Length: 97
Image (cartoon, rainbow, N blue to C red; front, side, top):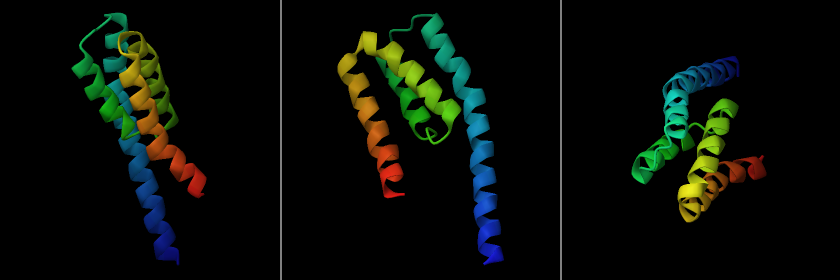
C-alpha cells in the first residue's frame, strides 16, 4: 500500500509541475490575444485546445474561461462548443466522484 500511495503522490507532484509550466506558457499567450484583440480564430482555438488539457488546474481554468469570454464576441457558437468540451471532460469526472 505504501508504494501505491507514493506512486500517486509522485504523479500528483508531476501534474502540479506540468501545470505550472503550462501557466508560464499560456498566460502570456492568452493576455496577448486579449490585449492585441487578435481575431485569428484558428490561433485562439489552438490555445483553447491546449488549455483544455490542463483545466484540472484552477489557474489554467481561469485562463480558459477568460479566453472563452473574449472568444464569445468573435464566435459565440464555437465558444459554446468549447464550454461543452470542458463540461464533457471535467464535469463528468466530478459527477463520478
